[in-house]
Image 1 (cartoon, rainbow, N blue to C red):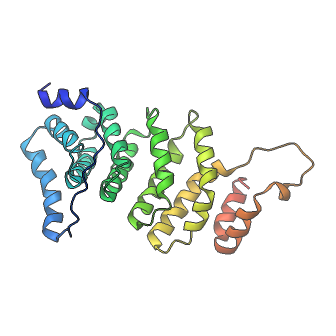
Image 2: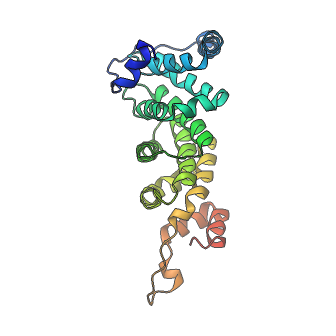
Image 3: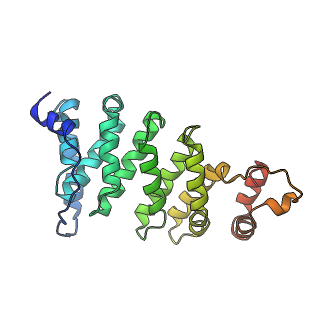
Length: 248
């Protein structure tokens, strides 16, 4: 293990504080970001590429952090075994990027890469990272940035499949706190966000199911009136889905 690798594995992740100058990204620079990762992978073995990306993911420059997150996503797609080997380090870097205090681009790329990696590892052995990812994804569901909202809905819906028994109670509480956001963004101004929200709503619907209480209340009284009213007006097909699966 060389000096760079020891430094990455031995030190806590610093929080970036430098605000880079905002510049318009030209088409040339856009393609250069993609070719940078490809050329790096051709020149270096996967192990070296990973540690180079890990170091740049902590760089004070938001542009370099953004490119590093994109590079980790490319590695996850092309060499998933290598990423699985360093899963904890990768998740630590991506969660750190998810909470980036400076750059929306870094946050967006971190969510996209997390979506890829969670799919590869099927959400296994996430540990406390599950909480960190869920809390930030839920926060970003109402962000003004369309790209962030879209990726947040995709990621949150994916987490619904990976909550498992360990995180079921926690995720149920998060879904119930997110109910208003789910209903609101079914009518999102961006059609792609609205579509992602609808998919996520279906994935999260089992967590909206109330526990059956033995009481004198009728079945209709125990249903969520706000949820039923809004869905019956805007999305009757979702309401029918909930009824058919005995969620409401």
